[in-house]
Image (cartoon, rainbow, N blue to C red; front, top):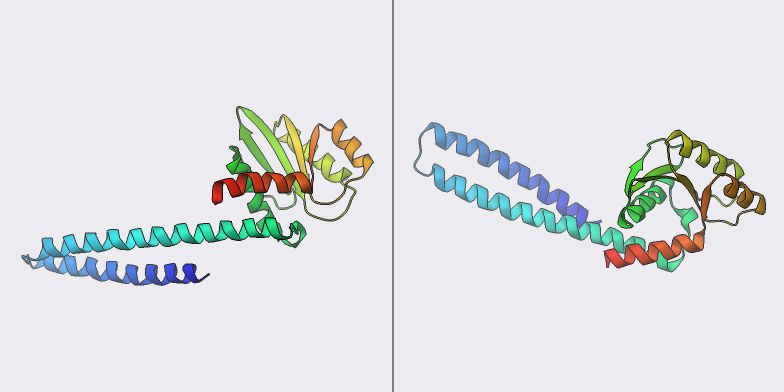
Length: 195
């Protein structure tokens, strides 16, 4: 959070400086001042230095966010405490790290993503609620998969699942990824790439 505030402050003052420099350069140009080229050179150097500082802060901010996610995964695995958006973003980062191109459908009611890899298209749905009856969700994933011409569907869930739902998944060509396997994937791929 501190890095974000520093980045915003540096960005704000940088824009002010760039604005003043721009008007000063125009002024020197219009009066044909001999120091125009010196001022332009200093302006460019300062801009490059500020840009490098902002990039460094952005990288640090991203690393801090990744480390927070890793600590969260390792500490308590309470996926149900995540907001829908944060859980979805975690899935997007996970599958992206696994080498998939991820398309977010942007439809909140579907709770799903489309993955592309090696000319294959997969529909992934996820449910972070504690209910064990996932039959309707599995049916919805199968429908969404067919609608989007996907070769198969995957359901990611964090609670136990009923035998009826497992049967439904088999009939619907939907793979099941439970909490334990999700934890393994997150720790395997995200820590490997973020630390």
